[in-house]
Length: 353
Image 1 (cartoon, rainbow, N blue to C red):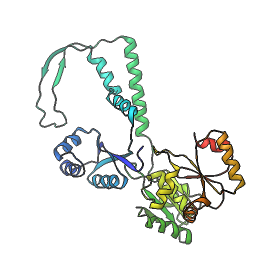
Image 2 (image 1 turned 135 degrees about the vertical axis):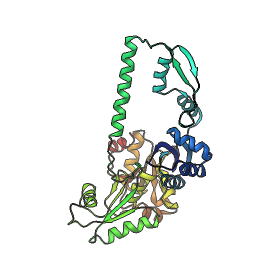
Image 3 (image 1 turned 45 degrees about the vertical axis):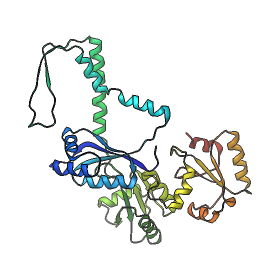
Image 4 (image 1 turned 45 degrees about the horizontal axis):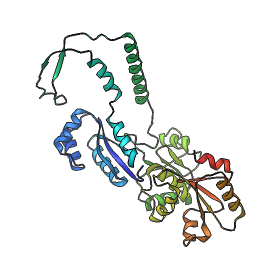
C-alpha cells in the first residue's frame, strides 16, 4: 500500500437528472481522457479508474469537484507492487470475471445463424453488432445446477451489499468518511482544544453544539449513540474520539485518512511505526535506565518478535518526542497510529496478528 496515496475511481453510478455533457467536461478537465471519452464512460455506466495513484489532498479535491456534477467517485488506497508480485497481479487482472466465464459456457453451445448490424444512434450505450442464434441451449443437468448455485450466490451477495446500512454516521452520501465534532456549551477547555487542533491541521469538519435537553434531535441521538456521555465527541468514518488528546486525534485522523493531516514532525516520528509497505508495526518507547523496559526488551527478543525499540533519553530531539507523543510513562507502546496499553509479552504478540 502506498502511504497517503489513493486510486480515483468513477463507479458508474450517477445522480438522477445528471447533465452528461457537463459531467464529461469535468472528468476530462480532471483526468487524462478527453470529454468525448468521458461521455462514453458515463453512458456505459461502467466503472473507470481515473488515477491509479494520486496524493490524498488532490484525490479528495477531484472527488468533491466531480461529485458536484452528480458523478459518484470512490477512493481506494493506492497499491504498489514489486517484482514477481506485480506480474502475478497483472495475470490475475487478466483473468475473466465470474459472469464472463458463465457467459462463455453458454456461447460454446450456440450456433450462429446470421449477424445483423443495428444502428444504435439513439441508444449510445450500445455500439456493437447483435448476434441472433437459431438453436436452443442444451446443457448437462449438473452444469445447470452449478450455474444456478453460482447465480444464487451472486444474487445473495448483491442483495447483502445494497442493504448494508451505513446510516450516515461519519460518512457522506457516497460512503466516504467525513469528520463530525459534537460539543456542548458546558464543555469549554477540552472542546476548544479539539476544535483548535482541527483548525490548525486544516481538517474539513462539521461542528454541532448539542443541547442535552433536546433528546428528539437527530444530532443528540448520534452523540448519545457514540459519545459515551462525554464531550467532545469527534467522528471520522467508523472511528470515534471522546477526549482532547493530541495522540488520540492523530490516531483518529491517521487511521481514517493516512498522514494527510499530520505535521511534518508527526509524520517523521510516526513513520517509525510502519513497515516500508505502510503496514503498522510495533514501536516501543523506553528509557535506557528503566528496569521494566530492559526486561521487556529481552523477553521480546526471546519471543523472536520484530519491533522498534527507541530509547528516548538517547535521542537528539528528546523533548520534541516526549511532547508530540505525550509520553508520560515507560515503556509506552504503539502499533501504527494506535497507542497500546500494558507490557505483557503475550498481549504484545497479539498486536502482531
